[in-house]
Length: 341
Ligand SMILES: [Cu+2]
Image (cartoon, rainbow, N blue to C red; front, side, top):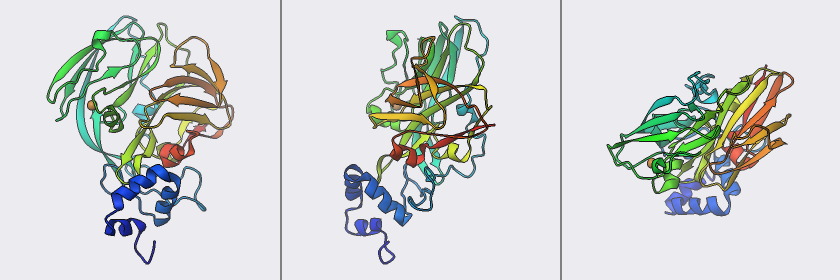
C-alpha cells in the first residue's frame, strides 16, 4: 500500500494495470507475487470476486496461502479423492458412460471463481473406472455454445480418438476399449486446446487389470491450475480442483496399511510439475502400467498429461506433507497432507 492506494490501483489509474501485471507475471513472477501479497489484494480467476490468498512471508506457514471455500466440509471432495471401487463386472463388459459438457461458475478457492467449462458440472470430471478389455460407450452431449469433445489417453481405437469437435448442441458416442491397465487422463481436444483444458475439461480414468489389484486404500489426485487475468496463467494450482483443500482437510489413511495413489498431471502451461511426499518413499508405476515398480522415489517428475500409480505405506501415526517440488505451484494451492491414523 502507498498512501492508502494499492499498486494495482496506481497502475490502473495510469492505464497500465493489465499490461504491466501480465508483464510482471512473466518477468518477475515471484516479486510481483510478494508485492501483491503485501497488499493483501489478490484478484481472481474467472474473474469474479476476490480470493483469500494470505500474505506471504513471515508469520505464515509453508503452503498456507489459499483456503478452500468455506461451504466445503472435510468430505466435499470424497468422490474425487477416493476412486470408486471396482464394481466386479467381468472383464470384457460393456459400460455406458454419459457425459454432458456444461458451463459453470466454480469456486476453486475461497472467494476465487473460475468461469469453467466442465464435463458433468465438476472440475475435474468424475473418475471413470473400468477393467482392461471392457468396452466403454461414452455418450458426449455438448450443452454449451462452443464446440468441445473428449480425447482418451491409453489405447482407444484410432477412429474414436476424439479430436473432432462436437458442435454446440451436438452429441456423439465414442467407443473406447479400456486399456492398457493403468491410469489415463481424458480431456477436451478442441482448439485452442490450452484454454479448453485450463478451463476445466479433464478427468481421470482408472483401468484395472483383469483380476484386479491387491487391497489398499486408494486415492486419486489430479493436479491442475486456473488462470487469472492479472496474475497470469495458473494463478491458482489445485489437487482435485480446489486450492488449499488438502491442507485444511488432510487425506486420512490407515497407518501401517498399504496406500495406492493414482496421480495425473493436467497442469496446462507448465512444462513440468512433480509430486513430493515427506517422510516416506513410494514405489512408482509409470502410467500405472506394469506389474512391478520402475523405481522407488520421494519426488516424481511429471510432464503435462503424464501420470503414475504410486504405492507406499505410512508407517506411523502422523501428518505427512505432499506438494509439487516447484514451490511456486505448491504455494498457489497445491500443498496438502496425508493424516496416517
Ligand atoms: Cu472443449
